[in-house]
Length: 344
Image (cartoon, rainbow, N blue to C red; front, side):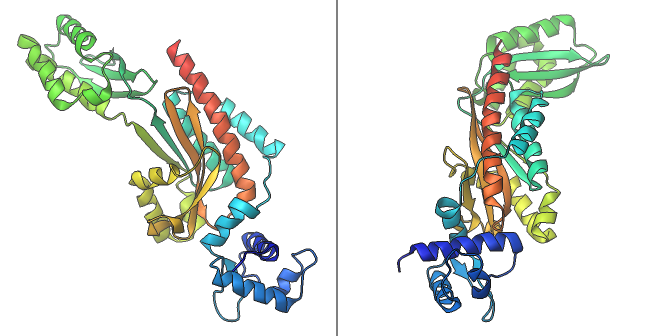
């Protein structure tokens, strides 16, 4: 069955009207929504055929029609009027992004918070490293008589720290030996090579000092292992319950996000421009009536990632997608500049 221009016009009008009202659209309402509309009887036939094609659904016999995931997808990919971000929304994003002052790793999460506040929807950001991170610096910062903060910094600007309590016998000589081991055996190493067996070998080489240095070197290993190659964050978690109207549904989506890999695999189906992935096209039942809208960003030769939102299929795609695309462009610029600052 051919998807004629009239069928496309009918589908476009129904999707737009349903997004605005949330009510099934009948043929009588549709007459007023289409330019040079044919009769109600003709529109009913078109709607029935669109149901057969899988683009519309009739909730019950006497009801109008609502879009299916396939109908939404066709609308977004082919029928929706492409629009630019408004000057007002661009100014809001520009001003909010100008207040982000943090290391490159934390910028996407801060940007997702802005996006959540702007859209009223739960927002996600995913940051991936384009190459293995290497240890750039390790420092011991005194914070008490016997306590120090162990700080691990990678060459792509990511940091992790933990509080470490030193023994009373931890002398300046042991500290110097620790820094010597770090310089020879750890600095410049990819995080992936700092395995438990490798660190155990480093400890063994410490000889007489191994007993005193073992806890601290083990803490280096544990702290470095916390640095993920892919970081997924959710902002606006509270909006999950407002948007989806069910604590059970919100909890299922939250659980899916916490598993990380499902959402990352969905995001990697987004092209270089802003795009939408419909849950019905994935294997995840939690998202069967929902969509992920995201755009790709990059950060020099070290980072790439995605920023976007998760929401129900009934969402204002034409208003939300330009804002997400603009935010991703700003994010690319911001991370690239922050990365250069880290290198200087």
